[in-house]
Image (cartoon, rainbow, N blue to C red; front, side, top):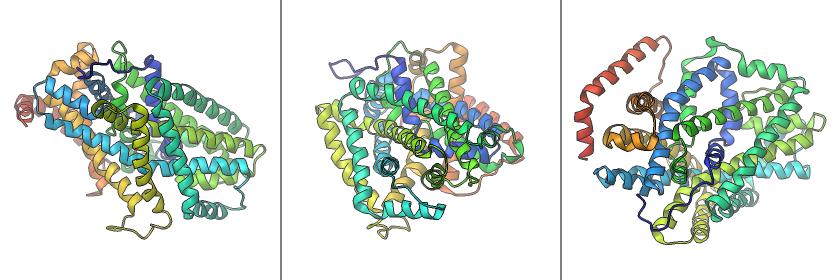
Length: 487
């Protein structure tokens, strides 16, 4: 379907896509947030609910994005436009692709600053610059790190340069070769850190914190946390997965590949918990400190432990790799679009994009120091990038994707691309039409803070509403699809 005369580059195999997609999903948030919310909201009970949310919301949307990419053979903009045109629908639906591509670039604009923290702390560990006797001392180190624009700017610039260097080499030579050693390396480092944690004295407490089945702790807030994390962790609606899907070989199973990525993402997140929390519990620290857990509590804990400096270096090296595998995925949609539509070589597209990225990320970096007072509506530039992408663009993009796939396009489009048997295909279609949209709407409403969503004691009603929606939708779907197809 691609308009280009040259065949589109492909991953060397399904394994390359799996590593790249898992690398995109495993970012800084997975290293600290998922383990923490798992322990906070019921341990094993939360994991079961999270997996249910992954398979009800995350996996169907991810399968849809990969199918769009592989069938449309292009960036989010081009792939969606080609697929809707082939179905005789309006090209206006390609706005979803534009929003996804812009969303990924905006996320990366502030993500390189956060990723810079990891590289900065790796250097501090190597140079012996992380010393203190209390969490307050470490908080002062973290504050000083951000208050210096030259220091913070250097590390965010380094992340930008490394990202562009990798993507500039191409899909196979750059991205696939990089993730082929970074992701296994990340897992190996996690295994070593888990082994270290087993002898720290806090491993039993960490296992109990993460895996004890405490259904009573699974509050409405926990259910929303599981639902939201299931959507955001897979890098959905940001152009990354759709673009990566366009490089997936035709013979690879989208369903099996997607499930493998979702499982790998969850396993790595739980491994991160088993690496971090034994150290925290062994030193009597609070496991619920959010970002401070990594940049304040852990460095202090490493100081107090035998071989702590060595394992601290290993930890921040692992964290830096996780940050880098995510950053290269977020910019790939933009690079793909420039190469396909503007006739620009990949190296030129990469470095040109890198310059624009550097300029915008510098404004985000200044939000922590010189530009902290440059606010609009109570938010600085960094906050606005985060707010617009996570609260608006990603939920709306995800919702638009499933509506387009479930109601607008010809059913044969995804039946062919997914290659599923009738029963699995019917299950995917039901999820995409009713379950995933409902989950995304709940995420959207909760993220905006319109009202506090409470599920406690209302599961029978919610289930009844969902069944009623599906029944009504199937009754009205011919009319609804016709109305949407004419837009």
